[in-house]
Length: 261
Ligand code: UDP
Image 1 (cartoon, rainbow, N blue to C red):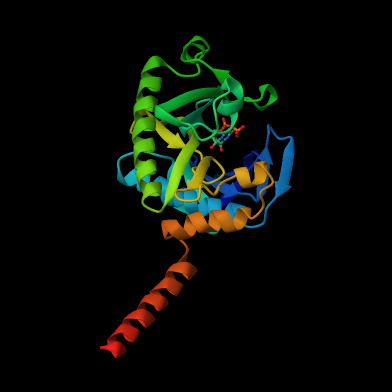
Image 2 (image 1 turned 135 degrees about the horizontal axis):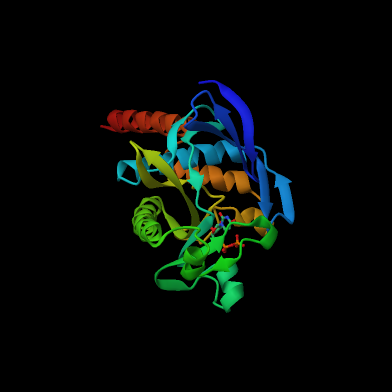
């Protein structure tokens, strides 16, 4: 597949055209931004980890029937994705209160919510992605009622799946952000999951220690962002080097056991 011209550059990713008009290449940069672009930095290797982690989560979601834009990962930093018309809403899903909601509503950080809370933010950097109500979405035709109903159902399934997936590797899924896009499949309009799901777009806390394994390490100047993202990738079992090492260890262990017998 031939990489064409740059179509769009965002804060953490670049989109390139391809020879197929329905497909684009998504390139993961090392740039990190927070607080509506006021804090900026480059963290070497972040894009590589996000590319792998997002590929893993989106392909798992696809296996449980959540249609999404991922076609395939190309290399360390790039993946081929379906070109969609992005719905201009950031869907924030919260299981535990942290980040902006704690400040906005005076809720204590770490408060477990009695059920998942979905918030809508209008995607507009100049306005600082303001929180909006469902009614705003209909009034300004950002999405139809039918589309939003479909998205809400998808969100709850995605949340259930991701809570379980992370729980299995000793991580609490505190909150995350999703984006959806419109696409024509066999002449039919569909809504599919788009963008990325990674420690840049989720809050992930270690189940036992509550250690932050996500972009809060950058937002709060906690340091060691790469080791934290690597830890997430390692626990998800997607780092070849690590799985090879554990495979060697397992072999060694079993030979030791055999000798003991
Ligand atoms: N989030 C994101 N992109 C955004 C805003 C939020 O990926 O533009 C994610 C963020 O990483 C967190 C969740 O959505 O996992 C909730 O973010 P919050 O509203 O608390 O905002 P923040 O703390 O980033 O200001």
